[in-house]
Length: 300
Image (cartoon, rainbow, N blue to C red):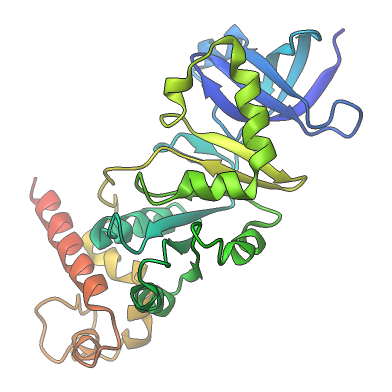
């Protein structure tokens, strides 16, 4: 019987899954190109980047193997298709491209609804530090940890490393915000090694279209994911939406009407806080727009 190794899938391309061995021993850290056994197709289960798996080696010279078991997932995202995430670090550029706050807020809501912790990294702060601090304050007040960074000046990356330590994190964000630059700085050797194992299929054109997992150290992994261009609307009812905007919490129960939706009601504590600039204008506008979208969806 072949020896079984415990590993994590760090990349998947065209039916090949690159698995890094996590078992202690001489093979720890080695990467094998694996195929998934037919049983998974019959069960309707597709391996995901981030899966913990058991695999057997079929060719020691060419580093090939077969995945024989997929361990139970802690969680899984659909877009990007990744699993076993401890948290998402959402990377945004202060400028070039400017942040799309509505899509940012939608993404935060969806992660909150999925029970996944989110932290925000503001990159390209060398272009406008004042804006970075302004944006970070809005989202700190909303209950999120914010990291200020610049890959150009290599500032703030130690803070980011500390935030990632001991966890499996997704670096998510739109194209052009600097996710890949951050990954290359944090894990240059891992990036080089993973590209080397892709030599057989030579699919360089896929590098920005597939999620990839990099090992920073023995217990720290980061996903580099394709830029997201659209975000689905939340799946819950409009009445629940206000509970996902954490900066509203301290005003809950202080409005004139019980169950106030903070839209058109008079004597609303949230709208008063908005007037007093205690709640970010962009956050409130995102809330209002999402509330309207959820109201329209209910009609149909």
